[in-house]
Image (cartoon, rainbow, N blue to C red; front, side):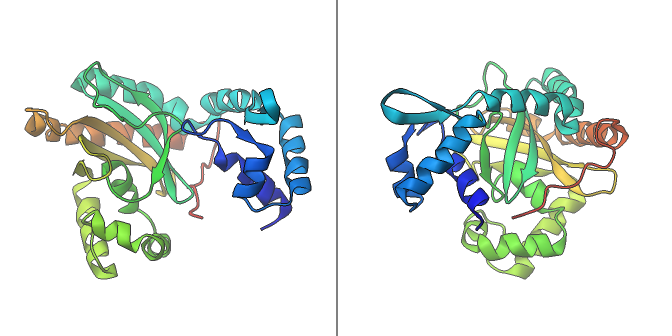
Length: 259
């Protein structure tokens, strides 16, 4: 790992659960010499990616807000998908999510939550593993074989516990079924209490970029009606994919490569 990679890795420590870190804590977590950690922190602070607070600790800096604004205005998945996901939520009455493939994870880029949204619903900027749940499964089902093999090798145990198969052949057969039906459904696979219904998003070359999904509570008495929304989700996904392909902002939006 290069020194630049090690420096940027410090940002991975910051989360909603742990938003404040001291230089000493970061040096210990990443097994860095104190002098090296301080040098990295100085660079990140000067770039605005981190900000200093009391007692020599750091929090996420204001540059992140500027980058988020740029992302909202320039990313076709967000700019094309946001009005579609909002309209889908209004038409169906369910919470809706727009997510993208990001390295070997799924990241939410837009959430439209209804008043009865289940607790713990995926929100903008949140990441989750690329295993378990409709939002992830529909992306897995459209990955090229070499990328899917990489995921399988890294997360075989999680794939098995999610019910997708204990071996390679079973996983491929299960994902082929999902791919053929055009959508994925899950109930409490990733987060207890949440049912999901998702369809894939593609670039103009047919590479999977992410997914659009509806979500509701697994305790809802209307689960049958929820599952019946699959055609609406598929239609919304196709609309977004067409918009991405026609976008003038990014002519040839590539699929996010797996790490």
